[in-house]
Amino acid sequence: MGLFFEHPVQRVPADVVRAEIRRALLDSGKDDAAAVAAQRMAILGVEDPRLESAITTALQISPPSESDADDQACAAAATLAAAPPSQFFWGRAMLSVVLFAVLAAMGFWSDATRHPTSATSFFGFAGAVFGVVTALLSAEKARS
Image (tube, rainbow, N blue to C red; front, side, top):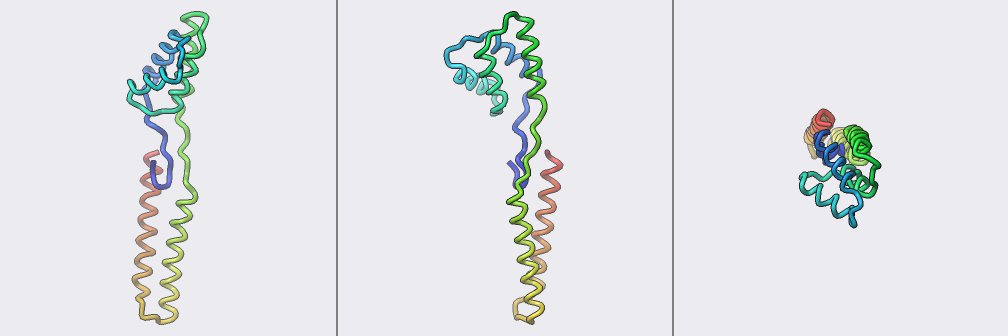
C-alpha cells in the first residue's frame, strides 16, 4: 500500500492461474471449498482475494466435460488478468494540501506582523512539504 495510492495485489502469471482454476474445476465437489482454495493460495505464495474467490467458485461447480473446464479456466484467467485500477486516497492528499496551506499561511502571517518567528522557516517548511508530496505522488503513480 502506498501513501496516496492503493496498488493492485501481486500478480500471478496467467498460465498458472489458468492451470489452478482448471485443476479446481476438475477437482470440484470438495467438502470445504474455501479451505482448499486457501491451501492452494498458500502453495502459490500470493494473497490475491480475487484469485482465491475464483478458485473457491471453481471448486463448487463441476463442468460437464474437460474441454468445458479448459474454456472456463481460460475465461476466468482472462478476467483475473485485467488488473483493478489503483485507488487514490483523497483524504490523505487533502491533508497534505492543508498542511502546505497552513505552513504557507503562517509564513505570510509571520512576515506581515513582523513577528520574531522567522517567516523564512515557515516558507521553507511549506516548500519542503510541497516537494515531498509532489515527489511521492509522481513516484507512486509511476509505479501503478
